[in-house]
Image (cartoon, rainbow, N blue to C red):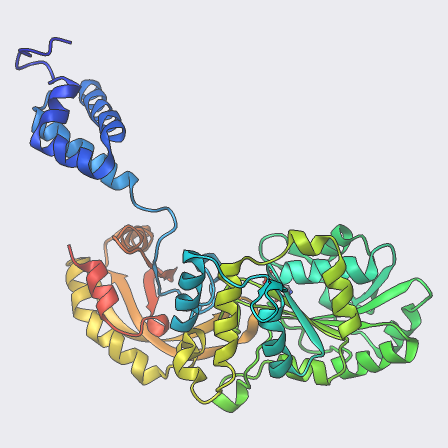
Length: 458
Ligand SMILES: *Cc1c(COP(=O)(O)O)cnc(C)c1O
């Protein structure tokens, strides 16, 4: 290309664009190599469109391309779906204490496996063991990557090559690819199904126990409920059957909770301490469901069984890093003061918000959202019901409030979908739901108007 004097109907050279004021600014921000690539891309786009632009315009186009490419793939969104613990949106928001602990651990060396008292090797699990024991009454505890990993590890350590007995009513699938029968196969234990989908009795378990039985497993039916003509064996009764036959019983709580939710006015979910008291030899549950911490899974219960899990080779493959252990420890510490927990633990704080408080934020956002949406949209404050999510309390919902965006008559049936996409395309994406031809935004997870108003600002 002729660099010295491009005729007006030819684009400037890449070098000329890079030397322009806009080009220099882009290089300072994004680096020379990336900026040169973007300029070539802009020139190629012009050529394809049969268009010729001057150096400054090309530099601006290149900067816009670089700007778009520099938006992180994983970024914050406003969760207005009405599901508080939304798996696709990262489940529990974390406490400031956890954020600070994680950030501190990320920056430098920590006592991950180091005992400062003795000046020698310590254990990764020591940071959480004491807290988990205190909060649940369990003899011993360990933490791994997530609850799926906790179940996998416990089955592999206790029941590989032998049989695990489960009710047909509890052979759950939990989103993604967590299917209880598949996890069992991966762990090398043979699944023995007992009872029927709707009814399982004590005699079903007792009749299935042989010398090959390694474990009786109870699974919390996290995302559905069997109602009507149904019967299940209570955890306490299953623990008694297990004890009478000399086999261990494991209770997979799924979400589990360390706080007494009923006392806080929320629908009751069994606490981990209750599961331990009911006689389960091992209990497994998640760190990022109702517990409100980072992704993690816990195995706790009888010390000899936890020790077998800890000694299994899979344990090393499923372990946690320093960042998550720091966040978990900080989160678990909050449970030591149940009175301040509803204030300090965001997941719980969001679940406890009252309808009037939520409605006030929705009302403050109504007019700005209507102005942003334009004349074709009617925006109204509506009552709605939030879900807890992540399989916790699948049937109960919480009274909430939000905004509904209705297209005016005459817009095509696809209008609501297009509006939901417009909201997702904001600088901070706003994630709502489309139902009955309207976009619905549940304000339970929006504690103040400002984040939404900022997202709407041009
Ligand atoms: C959610 C859940 C799991 C999986 O837990 P993750 O932490 O998502 O791996 C396992 N079992 C039950 C009963 C669950 O509800």
